Amino acid sequence: MRDWSKIKPDHRAILENVDARSSALDLGCGSGELMEILSEEKSVKVQGIEIDEKEIRRCVAKGLSVFHGDIDTGLSEFSDSAFDYVILNQTIQQVKNIATVMSEAARVGRTVIVGIPNFAHYIARLQLFFLGSAPVTRSLPYKWDETPNIRSLSLKDFREFCAEQGFRIDKEFFLSGKRRAAVLPNLLADTGIFFLSKRG
Image 1 (cartoon, rainbow, N blue to C red):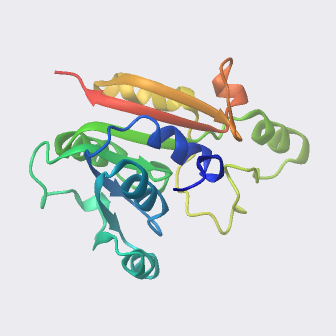
Image 2 (image 1 turned 90 degrees about the horizontal axis):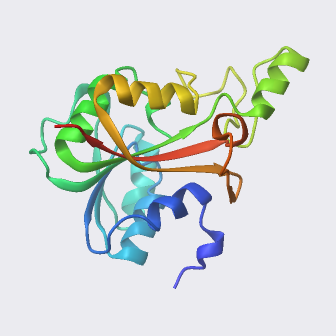
């Protein structure tokens, strides 16, 4: 069995809140680390979609089921409610058409799990204010010229987006490193994990 204390905090928050033996589609799955954990620890039947061929090869080497694809173009190959969960962990800040991707995720999955870095975390604010440069933090580890992120958003921004787009937030978890941030999450949390469903 895997040592749960060594699992990344965002992966652990997701792992602890998905049902065993459920099904999941991981959009922008990267090297498949989260997929592997879900499969091993909760017997989740998980598939991934990834655009980076190097990452796909890493997934395949682990025995994971991954499709090569660009999630910005939609999920037309999947039927409505095909999965219990659709996961976008550390993904939506890298896509062009967030509303479209989220709408498709909600069509394909009964629950959408979104994990985002908080660009409004106090360390990022301090670096920008005092150093006058783009922040590099634990949840935003890239220099401005190397980052895959094309959008900057805060936890507050994402909550407002959900309200505007008709998503209900069923669960939310705010993390500061390995700890939960229970108060002032938009200031103190570096990561947010949201479990969403579509109203109506």
